Image (cartoon, rainbow, N blue to C red; front, top):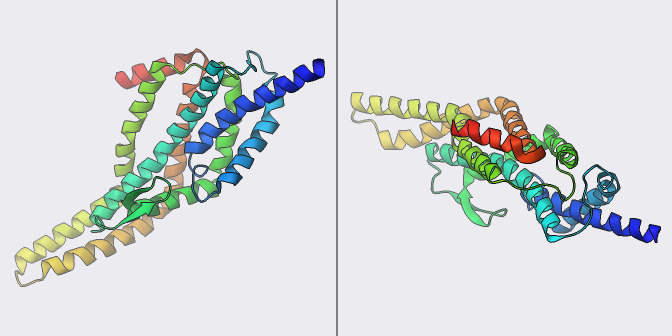
Length: 268
């Protein structure tokens, strides 16, 4: 009977861990990429759950029983991680859209396989480069380590998603636009100066074909500044990734006090 009870407890804990990790894999950068086969993701989630279940089931305040509230609790933790980190990819997409507009690529769209919608060409390029930075910097391993630590902050079946946490996520989403403009600022400034320079030349020499010069000059100038600013990308993306990861860890903190504090700060 003891062996049967232990086996049942292990399967229950493994199911709850699977739900939590699946929520993260569904939305987090790199792990949610459609380039990874679904079967590979399923095997990965199953292996993580199999290895973590014996450890997290013995933690204090862990609830190994399977119930609807416990399943919702674990799904909420995974979604908090996934949605918080997905904001980074949305920031890259918006920055690419800004740069594409300055490069006169606003009408060049591609079908994004991740969302099945038409996205700007440079938006897809920025997301691919951001994913490359995540892999090269080892941020995917940091995300997994943070997910393991989350079982100490929010034991199995013990997390309650507070309304204050939702307000914090909405407030964090508003920072996508500021971060995107900050990332695209060098290109935006350079192309704007190039456009002003061509306009002044057009005033000085009316015979100058301004329309024929503006688009190629803006494109070449923008690409030159974009290539030059790529050296700053790793530090920028690592800082934003770390901030969003810290946000996710604080949102699942004990008693939800951190979420209320963050909401008050954003409201103030």
